[in-house]
Length: 241
Image 1 (cartoon, rainbow, N blue to C red):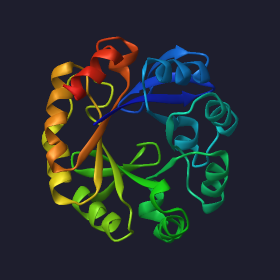
Image 2: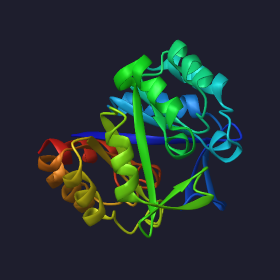
Image 3: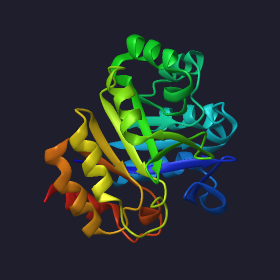
């Protein structure tokens, strides 16, 4: 199972939001490239990089920063935020991005998703961001009437192989993940699942680790790593033990 540090970018800085709210932002660094290099130096094999400006504005904004990160690290990069056209997907692939995260367009432009999967296969991964069992899109600004079970059914028909699952209410709250939701989703699909949201202790890591038998392959951790509530080295030991 893999531990994936989150590197969220807004206005050129590395930040963390609570439940996706801009008014609950903490700035951790003015240099996201340095942060990405730091996590790799600590042992990260994969990074979760999100362009928050892109997510909020519907168009990826941080291409230059992303390009500099790609040049600076060998780790697998999964990237999302405002990726809503095949042209942007093409650009990201040319930059050498390993995994491209799609969310909003799964609902609004499924034809683009199918085209991207046909073209790039397992480079395309899905994200399902949920609050009260409703799917949120557009940087979590819009809560749809689509339920998680419905979106999973759509994704399963698109030949996508990997899925990030986030409980928005838990994200950045430092109160533990929604283990039941992750388990329910993992059991209901053949997708490889990555858990996200609220993981804030070694106990939480152990709970997610137990879901490996249901197809959970990793977890994204953000604020807990930056606050050192969890030390990255301890997180790695936790999933290996």
